[in-house]
Picture 1 (cartoon, rainbow over the protein chains, first blue to last red):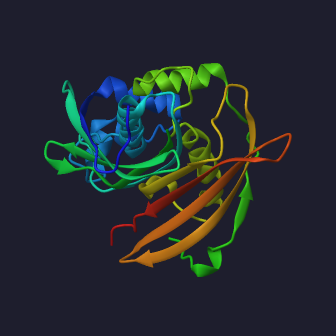
Picture 2: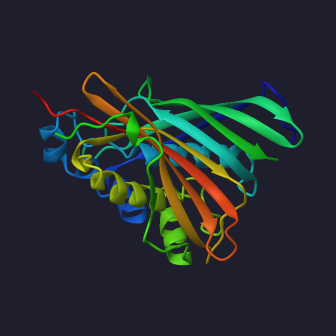
Picture 3: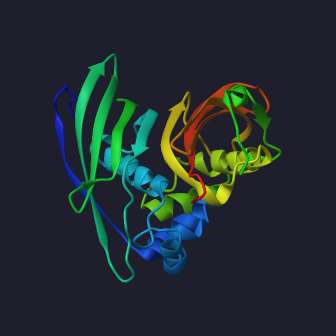
Length: 132
Length: 133
C-alpha cells in the first residue's frame, strides 16, 4: 500500500451503545456516572448519557489502524473534544470516521481524521502520526 | 470554590501507583474498543494518566465532579508491551481561567521503571466548570 499526501481513506463507521460504554468504563477505570446513568447525566444538564471522549478517541485510533494496518506504530495522536456523543438507551449510535493523509515523508505519515455523529463534528483537530 | 492562578504551572506530582501493563488490562481495554488484544491501543495509557490526574488535581482543590475533558494528546517513543512497568511524573503545563471555567493542561511522562528511559508522554487538558451561580 502506498501512503501519499492527499490519499483519502474509506469511511469507517462504529456503533456505540450503553453496553459498550459500560465495558469501556470498566476497562479504562473512568466510572464517571455521566457515561452510564441517565438520571445523573440529566441532573447535570446533559441531554442524556454521553460517551467518554476517550472512547470516541480510541475508536478514531481503531479507524486509523484499520486504514494503515494495525501493526503500524502510532507515534503521536491528538484531538480536541468538541461535542458530546449522546447515547440514548437501546440505541446504536453511529460515529463515522474519515481520514486523509496530510503529510508523508521519511516513512512517517500524518493523518487528519474527522468524526461525525449524526452530522455533528464530535472531535476536532484530530491527527495521527504513524510510522509506515 | 477554590481559586487558582498561573502559579500552578510547573507543579509536579509522582504517582504512587505502579503502572504495570498486564495482559488482562490490555485485553480488556482492547476488547472494549474492538481492537486486537496483542498490540497496545495508542490511547491505552489514558488508564494511567487519568488516575494520576485524579489523585493530583483534587489535592490542589479542583472539584473532580465538575471535570470535562477538553483535549488529549499522546506521544509514544516506543510501542507499549505487556509487562511494561512504568513510573510516571505529572506536571501542570498550563493554567487559565475563562468565563468561570478553569483549563488545566497536565503532561504525564511515562518512563521504564528500571532504566528510566522515556516511553510515552500524554497531555490532557481538563476543564473544571464553574459552579452555577
